[in-house]
Length: 178
Image (tube, rainbow, N blue to C red):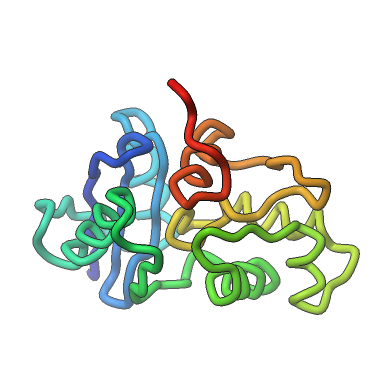
């Protein structure tokens, strides 16, 4: 039986669980402390039909994603350029997420409605929001860059404080004063 590799790394926004298959990075999970970690690894095993193997940070399939994430949080990387395994998403959601990763660069934002227009589904802002909520690769597929058309932050699976921190890191929002 094939397996996937996973590990937890510390980041500027707390512990992140990273998982990869031979096809690329397959999952990023925020706030990956023990109960979240155990549930995430179990869900991944079920959805991928594989067992998870904990990877020693810096080796195996996750070495490059770990290095690039560290560079991102240190302000030295604006694109991840990693191979991604899209097997946890399909259809409209995959179309929207691919459009996002390909056309919304570091330091910019896009409205839910504008992203719906870009994929040929005007008026589907709520469906775009649902696609963002189902994103298996947040941060690397930058759903934090999707905001409300009126300038509000909108939602975020990692929490609004995490979204604010990421947008501040990318220079979209001012850095907090404290």
